[in-house]
Length: 538
Image (cartoon, rainbow, N blue to C red; front, side, top):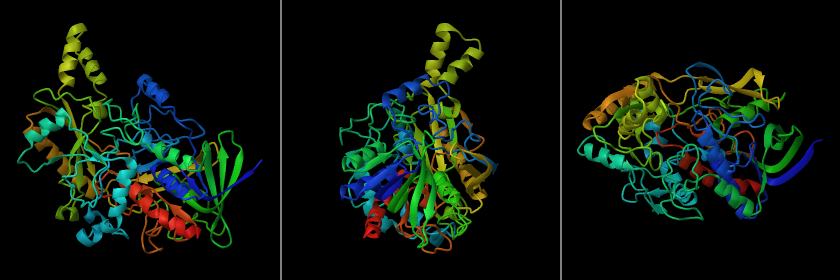
């Protein structure tokens, strides 16, 4: 039986973008519903699941279920149907709170130049808004998420407001690396992060559990359940375990209803004056494309043929080595500092820019250490106390750095609908075509050179460079914003060019990637879109 539902605004997706929009609208008296495909998470159970998991990947605390399937890091051809030539390696979750459950927490702003990449360097394209237009909303986003940072250093992005909390203290590794790189081209700086450095917003300060990915056991790290809770407290309704499967379009061009399926496979129809898609840059284009009809054979909101195109990530160059003296990793937040002064310059005409993340997680990302370290010593014949001593010594000297590469938009990097594989609701699975360009590969060559130089200055040994890129978990593009309806999906207010009561929030709207982790920009754009959504209701 099909049951009708209604609200002023339906927000599809409960990650940071959807949760912020819902909370802000609900606080003004707007009747809001949040529709989420996944279920709520019990934090204690998630921690236990992670501890017990044999395979430690970002999703290991949240095993997928048939009713809310999501990709897995160690199975890139599972949920994703991939045709290459390169594998797309970044993932997401379907849960109340979305992928903020297993994000790192890094909250960098984009640089002013990132908004004008084509004007400055002849690459990619410009955003329809400037850094100056978004800057006040960056400050609001930092307040909403609770960002700890260093007010004395803007990291190249001018600020009009202070961070709500003092910076997270640097790790011992940060300090050692900072000393070794004094008077070098590499400036070690504190990383702004949505992690409490003190008790704030009814959440305790970080206690250094070193499991930010995949789960903070005490919620010192922000996740979107914070704003889901605020939205519900303000009167919003949370409709979880409900997957949107089709958008219906009326003769006036407005989205007339959203069809959804519950976990028991029963059906529902939701009618709202405004629909906000906050499903991430894979699931939003998948829903739009799956909603095609005779009048719109290419899908909803797709008169430009740009829906699903220009899929981007920050391809990661990983490198690791052994320090000369112990630096004591595997403690505290997984990253507390980075090298941010390599993110801009005339070189962007020829190669991608990158930022260098300094990891406090030793070799766990590239090799699975310290468990793999003990296994390696066992293979060498060590036993008992000898293997314990050797593992402790090696693990204390594990160092890892990662360069996150800027990626240009490419219309052939795209999400489409698979022709044969479907989910349990009958919706085609996402089919991904993806490649890493020479622009990015040239940047990775420079990153490896920089990594080699950094470890040499630290007198490190046993340097290893990952032979291929890793995914950063930053899924961007596919519903990009722009002033021209012929080349973009949404306008500068994130409203669909084709349907004036349809908005899209999240990293899918990014025209280019820059080098900053995207979450703070997602939050700032979402907050900026609230007034346009309110105007559309009027």
